Amino acid sequence: MRIGVLALQGDVREHARSLSDCGVSASLVRRASELERVDALVIPGGESTTIAKLARTFGIFDEISARIKNGMPTYGSCAGMILLANQVLDAIVGQETFGGLDVTVRRNAFGRQVDSFESDLTFNGMTQTPVRAVFIRAPWVENVGIGVAVLAQVQGHPVAVRQGSIFATSFHPELTGDNRIHKYFVDSVCQQAIVQ
Image 1 (cartoon, helix red, strand yellow):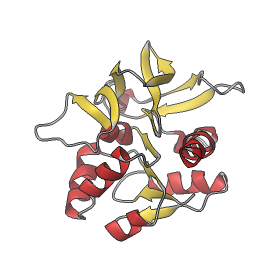
Image 2 (tube, helix red, strand yellow):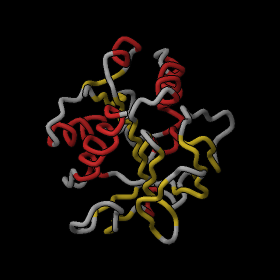
Image 3 (tube, one colour):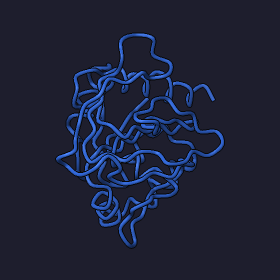
């Protein structure tokens, strides 16, 4: 399984390092030719509108969207969750998403940069110690569609969800040194896609 990290803006190196710690050699994806060579994709945190605009500029926006809709395993953290959502609340005018995840998310739901925080989460499917989560201008999920599993919540709001081959968190596991979220993506989401 060849996993790429969308390398247009955001926590690219941190995600690549987390994947490497899970035994995966990640490829950086900026162009269509690089996207064609990967089987799965991580969309990092950053600024969702900037990532979408850069994807348009680099000519890969439609290709990413099509690959997601065709079942490419995809993990989005923070801005990546926004970019995977079918609907975004508090979006700027003209904001685009790759879509594919049947959820409605609210941008900056937990507040501004000064409201950033860390929290220990119970993550469904992980029986070890809680997952440490870093929230930075994070979204949360307002509504989930049929077939979307809620894996973790904060203050009654979903912050980790999965729908088939699409997985998203509103937090930044790549900043904690705890690679269990990336391992979940590699071992559960990606491997299940291979079996199917």
